[in-house]
Length: 107
Image 1 (cartoon, rainbow, N blue to C red):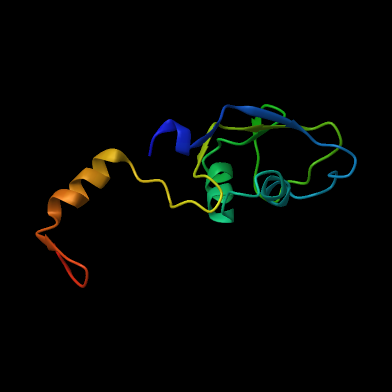
Image 2: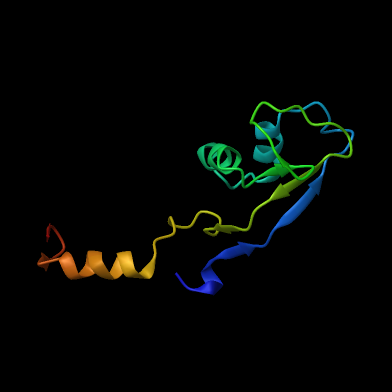
């Protein structure tokens, strides 16, 4: 996909407000990054890409008012769009097609 079809977001620093205090980190992120599947949210937390006040945190970490949550750069497909596939992988898939018509595809 080209850049016009992709939503790119750089590193973001989210501050926890009073309405979000005492929420778990995973639920806070799910509410802030609604387009992201929860499995991706958990992977970001598990690999240490999400930081709370500069340090690693677990998914069940309770947030407090004023906490700073670092969210890494994200690359999301547009709303309702197809999943993102790299151009190299797409080209390899297309080269593997031996025959294709309206009813069948042979690889």
